[in-house]
Length: 413
Image (tube, rainbow, N blue to C red; front, side, top):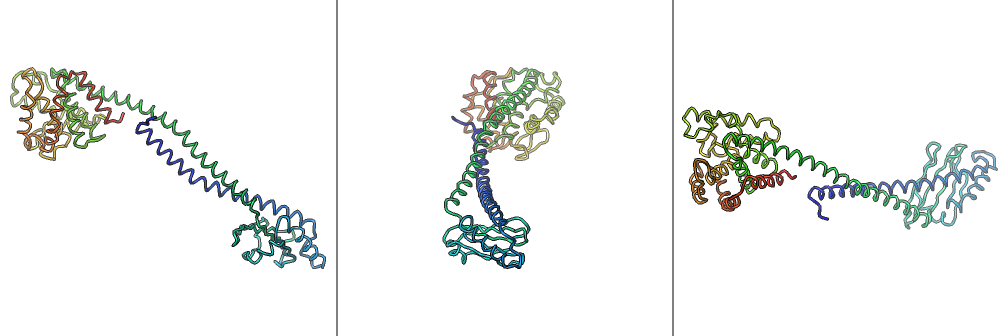
């Protein structure tokens, strides 16, 4: 199955998080399980030793029988639960000691013992030099003395503890991985829903943009195809110049709505068949400011401002309304200027026939450095022939399809 980019990223990130959680949970589960197994072993040993010791008299008495009872108790304990058994009185004096052969062999290897604190049994795990593992258990006694027992844990029991800890670690890791596997389809499903909503929002944006474009086209006695062409041409140039995402979206919207301010120009001026006089031309120029007012604060269309405000500026500073020059003009507006003039030269209008490709390019080359940014002309020069051939004979519906494909690509929908 081929995953789309989002699903692939989601799968990799969820897998990464799952592996991280598995890596963190496994050693923690292993440690907890091992400690639990040790504590269970110690609790059993403590309880059993305490039960046996209760059968004998208290060990803190001064009478001679107390010492005999302590020795008898210590001897009863070793060989079963412990390899070394030591009984201490309340003052910390050793009253009795017994050891198996194993206990005698390891006694010198044990670290110094400590008196248990409080009334809770305590224990210490000891790694012996020969690789064996011993548990030292300290059990407080009712008469304020205490019992100390050392048990060399047999290999089978150590292996059992290891296996239990390993099983807990594997279960924790498996749980983390299964959790990630369960989350992934949920994320993909929610992503599809979000993608559908985003497509619906984008479609509404495109519809609003087209409605505004058609409105001004109708007022200007145009079919609206010009808006599709210049937006698509500008996007092609901008792609070559590295525009991505937000910058490209703003360029497309601005290119499509570059003349939206003409909605506010009186018909007597907008539709005048002859040349405009100076006063009429000043009124016509106000369409830039009116266009800025229209797109300002309109969310997604707010990005159109750069092209709407700067599409009549010229590289040499002779344009309007702000007489910006060179790189003072936003790059999106400089790109659009080339696309707009090229389309105007190559298109049929009520008052003129279309120029040939060669004638149109000659005019653009002539005005490079005065009207147009030479860097934009340099980029456009290498793709102009292909653009001209692709647009030749395209109707409005085909132009709309070309622009829609471009919009969806740059909006990642």
